[in-house]
Image (cartoon, rainbow, N blue to C red; front, side, top):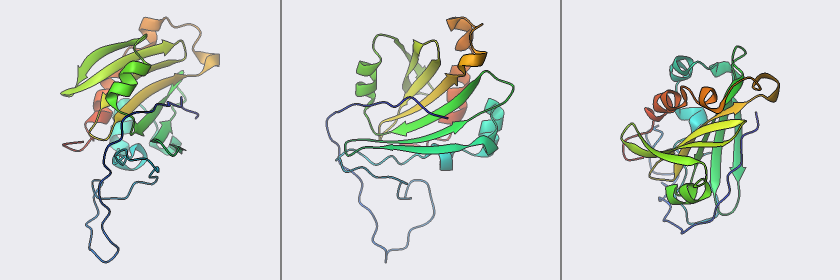
Length: 183
């Protein structure tokens, strides 16, 4: 599944220090070196949707964990860790993007089609940019977590915009439960 690629430039932030190989590190999503680190001064993308969301959350949201499709959008100035999931009985798939662009950058990019909302106590944006996408971008300490429905052209021509977005906030809420405190 190909996800929409977001691009943005912004003010840099300080990346966390990496433990040396001789220091013991307990296995935890908050200390794991991300599967990609860009060359910018932006924070590391510390939440990986392909590694940090349990299968039971995907099943609860109605997606098949076995359909996982991993990707990385890597540039020198930002990173997106992407994980996609499908389900044969729906006319859309799920794309999760964990990236280190700032929430302010995402607000500016989507200002013409986004509505500010609160989700699980976090600032978020409900975004409806086209007939083939419906998303929620959630603010994190490192940037954003995007939860997006990507519609299949051959199966989505009979739904109105309102029908296409029904339940996207609930899906985003299920996924956002797994963001660590302070992230």
